[in-house]
Image 1 (cartoon, rainbow, N blue to C red):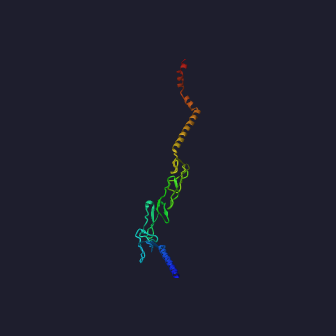
Image 2 (cartoon, helix red, strand yellow):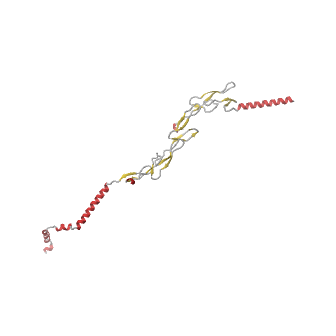
Image 3 (cartoon, rainbow, N blue to C red):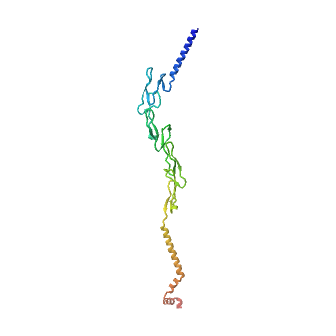
Amino acid sequence: MHLEGESLKTLICAAFLLIMKHSHCSACNGAEYEIDERCCPACDPGFYVQRHCIAFYTTKCVPCPVSTFTNKPHGRRICNPCTTCDEQIGLKKVKECTNSSDTVCGALEGNYCIDPYEGGCRAAQKHTTCKPGHFIKHPGTEYNDTVCENCPENFYSSGSSTSCSPHTDCESQGLYTFKPGDGVSDSQCGEISRVPLIAGITVGIILLLLLVGGVTLYKSGFCHKENSSIPPGLLLEAATDSPEFVS
């Protein structure tokens, strides 16, 4: 009975060891990968599996082909294709692809990233262009769009500057406002013409002199003296010809 008890205990222990061994083999560590219920050494970044391990051979790893990469230990038989930075979606190449790291893309000049990830960008679009009558409050950056704002009253802008310009004050420059300014254009000034003013003043002076001269001559009796300068003979003849004289 004692021998039978020992034998049973031995069988139980053997079975437990077999279970533990199987569990250990099926749970591969971080430097291994599981294939066909066995653990094989993983390939390093920059390589891929050409042949899985077998009983007497370890995993065979070879370098990734050009324009492909792997960036962590793995058990795959292919490498990842390198990302292409497409200018059509506003991207440029920031870092070249290697066999152990992917291409890093960034936003082209004049664009900002709309799909960022750690260290790079997947898609970008052009910065907003401020319209006339607006100014650039915050210029666009690699990760932010341009911020535009309306010009205040009596100011104008083409939309391409970071501030608005005040309308020209024509009157302060001795000019007249030909066309008032608005949000997109400056005031238009014109020179004040002096020719009509001078001509008007001259005509006014001449008329005033004529008026003053006429009044002076009238008051001085110049007109009566001219009438009295008619010869007496002509006056007598005129008088004898009149009907009253005949009667």
